[in-house]
Length: 189
Image 1 (cartoon, rainbow, N blue to C red):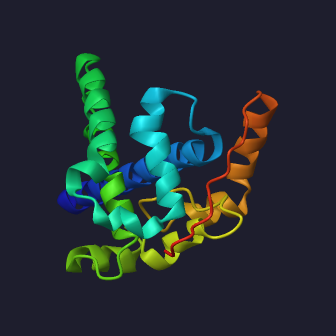
Image 2: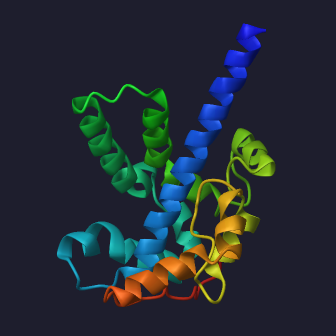
């Protein structure tokens, strides 16, 4: 019985880490789509802003890149955070699982733009543990202000229904941020 209880506990913690990673992708994706515009920073333009704008103009192009071009920013950020956690003495495996999932969040996002993902990915999409193309397509539809989480199918409905993203946007505007809504897709999903 103790082994079963431990397994359930680990599974619950892993699921919590998955949801935490999904929420963080949502916050970062929302920030990109809402705040970033070309010309704010050459570094951001090169590594984030231009790719984000191009992705919203031609969402399907994400499938054209190779693994490194798709995932380099997420891997670098997760590696940096992993180093900070290690130096700070963080020992919680859940924190490192969140970072590992975040390092692959663009790959998961790419699979959400794929009609025929790898078999195991397709199965995970059917369970909702990974986001499917059908669910992610909602992000690329007018008003382009919802479904920012890119890993699972679980958080977006709740966050969108409660007005979470609109609330964040309202706070950002009150703090002086200029909203730059993602460009509508021109070349299809």
